[in-house]
Length: 360
Ligand SMILES: NC(=O)c1ccc[n+]([C@@H]2O[C@H](COP(=O)([O-])OP(=O)(O)OC[C@H]3O[C@@H](n4cnc5c(N)ncnc54)[C@H](O)[C@@H]3O)[C@@H](O)[C@H]2O)c1
Image (cartoon, rainbow, N blue to C red; front, side, top):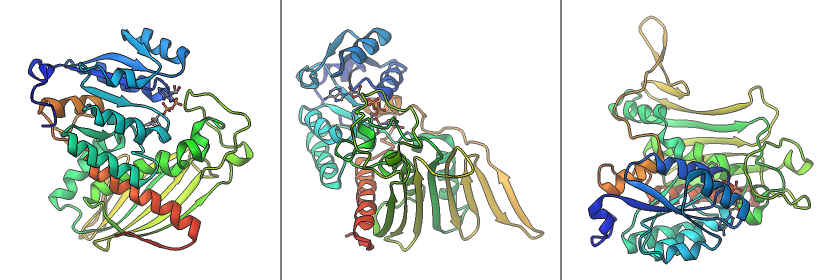
């Protein structure tokens, strides 16, 4: 177990949490940890005094600072939960890991695989828990699908299609989300990461052999397709220079293939298409809702499947605390998040070079 053996709170079975970043998802981090009886959110770091004060008052957090490094010096803090713009993920997570903290890091893990690999190595060195907040992996449909695959219901799964495509859902245009220097990338890093992570989790395979990708910027650069996600400031002069649609053909090392499609904005029939399809030799599966497709003697069967009991609990922060308590095993190992990051990087590289990227 990653907890330091001499930790008093490990013996007492309670954990002090510091959340860094009190924007849109920072509130979810705080509220989610507060649902675990063994977790206490005792401190918050936020550079915006208004957003910091609002969250501290709303959630009753006693310490509010602007500089997160002050919190890393507090020996009584066990967990650091990071809800920051993407470009700060690796830097702040590395600082927290070096300070010996267990780190819950929101997605994407980093803005490049080199930084992501540093995090994996540091967590291992420090013997602390590092987990990326891939909440889509926790949904009951995904967990149930995983069990069906493990039982052999699909036979050999040889191909998958995974999609998160919005019609008009670019996070607030002009915020950090829409600038490469702060976000690293656009829809691919923001929601493509979820669609890809849950699909590879279901396949049980994370290492890709080759990636062909193509990204587009068609709407945000014209001020179109905006949604209202995010609380950070808008820079009206900022250039929209991230992708608002991307697709990729990923050839896994086993020979299986994955088609990934993601968009923040696109002319499409539905508002939001957020689904994964798996193709097996005996049956196919898609969700949501979770359905199985298979041939029968008399025709073709399409069956809706109920969620199975005894799944990993859906609140990823509660799960994180359960892992520290030793009552759950980490459901999102950091090595898997690193592999996902490698593929995301390869999509951008392939789009830039116009060539397939081969991964070692
Ligand atoms: N898991 C999910 O489904 C999910 C959903 C939404 C967002 N996210 C991720 O969460 C992260 C944050 O997204 P958001 O929507 O909350 O963004 P946001 O812009 O609403 O909030 C970011 C906050 O970080 C603060 N901040 C910036 N630099 C800081 C620093 N050095 N120290 C302390 N605070 C600082 C900003 O002032 C802001 O309040 C992103 O990486 C995003 O990808 C994950």
